[in-house]
Length: 287
Image 1: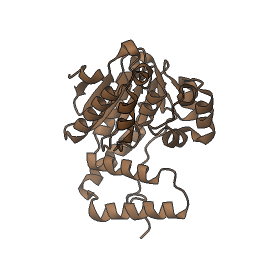
Image 2 (image 1 turned 60 degrees about the vertical axis):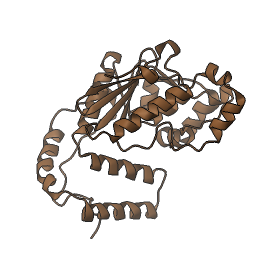
Image 3 (image 1 turned 90 degrees about the vertical axis):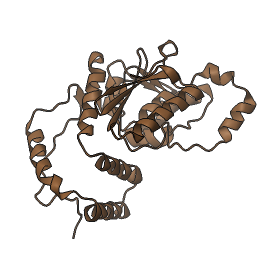
């Protein structure tokens, strides 16, 4: 375990690193220094070959209340202008990374905290989770990926509803809208998030990273060009990096997982893995 220097702690669970925002007295609000420390931790863990997945959560009672408005209000205007003038390497609230991130939303995720949640690949929420975008109410504009990532999850209409009202969305509505992927009892939240992350960690890191890149590249795209680009990407992978020796063992494991009861412990959309065709399905595209 490391921390809470930088406003967060890190606990290793085998190949999974649990990162917990640890400023409960301010509802895990971010400052520029705290945000920079969190980004540094994500970068360090991403470079560690022993870390295959991350879980990001907050110390109760909140996930993250966004940026500390008192700190921003007290910041020297010249220093703020200088900080804002620096180009950001981030796409959203987290630095570039290949390691998948499971968000475990334990309480309110507000404004910058909502953007931090949206930066995660998968979101598991406690029934205590609540979500709101108050940028317009406080007179700030989204800069952490909200207007890009929120519509990808819940569509433009509901995104505007959240941003133009500042109203809170509870966990059940968030699940119904697709803002989160599962809702579980609060006492099971971190356990379930670690289960999801541990399942990811069973898959080769290169495979996970490539699928994440594909989703990022295809986000918001549609039409024939998108399908053609996806097929071309799959063919390149099959020709250059596909591990045929792994296929036989994984095929049997997938059949077994598809026949077993669903591991989902809370409310979710569900689904099952099916037995892939002998030729590997659509992986190689059309010959």
